[in-house]
Image (cartoon, rainbow, N blue to C red):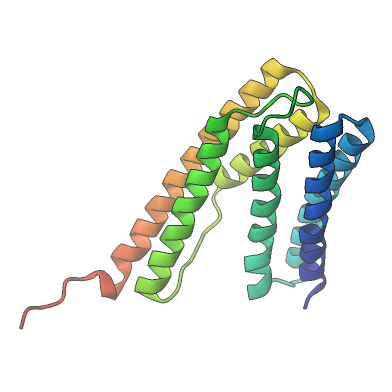
Amino acid sequence: MTLANKITILRILILPFFIIEVLHYRASGDEINRLLAILAFAAAAITDGVDGYIARRYNQRSELGAVLDPLADKLLLVSGLILLSLNSHGHFDELPDWLLATVLGRDAIILVGVGVIHFTCGKTVVQPRISGKVATVFQMVTIVWALLKWDSAALYHLCLAAAVFTGVSGVYYVADGIRQLSASPSSTPTPKG
């Protein structure tokens, strides 16, 4: 259990607090809940950078970290997108359903693809792409923008950028998956005999 992994676990443990505070704010409109939700999201986002830096700087990369880190990112972003896409009773600008559908659709396709590749090839190699990183940044900025209740017109454009980069990254991940399947000996036709 490396320090980077402990920080990632801390990030996962912050998530329920974030969810509870957003739900309380949506129900009551009490600004202290919104502030606590923003602080929880910010703490989770900062620890994401810290654990990545520690893992690279002190060579603490591990198989556990390779699973936990993206899982923690997905849990945080998807929960934020879901919470802010629901009817917020006027307390937040609601995020459009098409952004949530794009993110969940891409993630579902990637999850199924990883399963198919793992079953077929025995091992899945997921190479991070710059488009995926940009999509993650736009998703985070979109959530923070909505939590801070900044300009609604700009929020729409952030949602659009997040959806576009999410879709583009999905296409790249599918293409990578197809290449892995094509290169696998188990993908070649079985000789008749």
